[in-house]
Image (cartoon, rainbow, N blue to C red; front, side, top):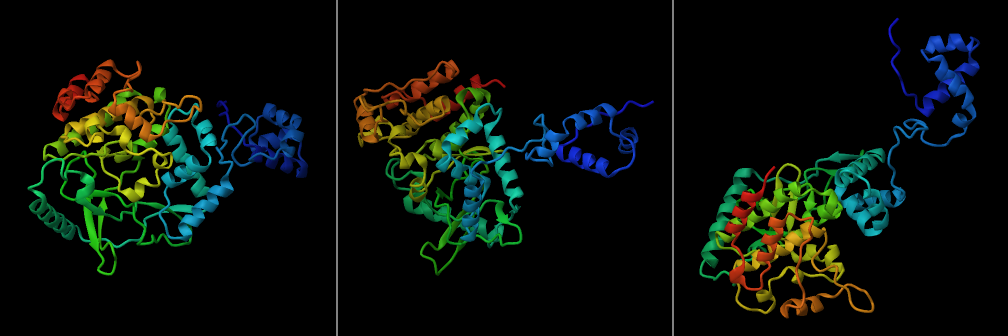
Length: 431
């Protein structure tokens, strides 16, 4: 006689069989044989019949043991209202927008949810995707006009030639900021959430307001894809940049506790950032605004440098908390002295502290008495007078901590070059 395969029944299935048995005239033994239910299992259902018929928990998927339970969002009405409002205005809606909503309005719940998760980012992303699908949303390609790739390449080449013809006589620290060599672009993501039966159209006036030079081409710098031109618009030229699906580094780091994000993975991102800086410095171009908000990640393409425009930064949590870019700036920049690419190396060292703590630099500094975080102006004064020490934890690889300390040296001449940084990383990285 073949061995019976074990089967787990949901609460809904148990209720259905119990209801059928009440209408059946056969014995319990015959009923079990007809429906292939083990006798011992049936006896257990009969004994817990009152509990089965009286429960109000999800009967389709869940069992009393908790198997099949779907994680729920306790503020689902707020979330659903937010999603519908966004799409009603023909704005872009992705899973990352849903996560940002959680971080803004339900930070405490989000912190509790991430506890104990092996990969908080993937778990949260799946939660948002499942929630959207359960509430009549589907992933759709946003409607927007495409320009032929041949025209995009021609536009990029023309822009590059005009830019360097105009600015080739300037010194490094006079221009050489990626932010000042670019233009606004409008780039809907590959797919957005749209309600079933409704349009996936995106309002053409909605922009990311990010800027990046069109002349840069590197696997470690966000790529210029193309552009469109609208004579009737105030900002007629709209540049399209490649889409990075994981968002910026600050968002990714905030998803994990430092101990749950292994250094083997962090080092891949650190290596890419260093390679991107080395590419810029070879022109030479000074980035001048290197921080976690200006580093983007993609699940397939890895880590790349970019530079957010002012209108985007005003919406970031660091700006609303009164935190600007001063915390990443080299002392010579704060003192308005002449500076070189070594200023970016200092910012790279500060970025390493973010990889170490998963928080912005100097967030641990509090005002005496009130215990409130110190404002930027106070921290700037401490940096200028060398009254604050930049340190790294023991959890960080010691060779990387040593490299970080060299990068944040007060004397620019004592800092390594980006070429030396990339050589150090290659020599020490072992996977």
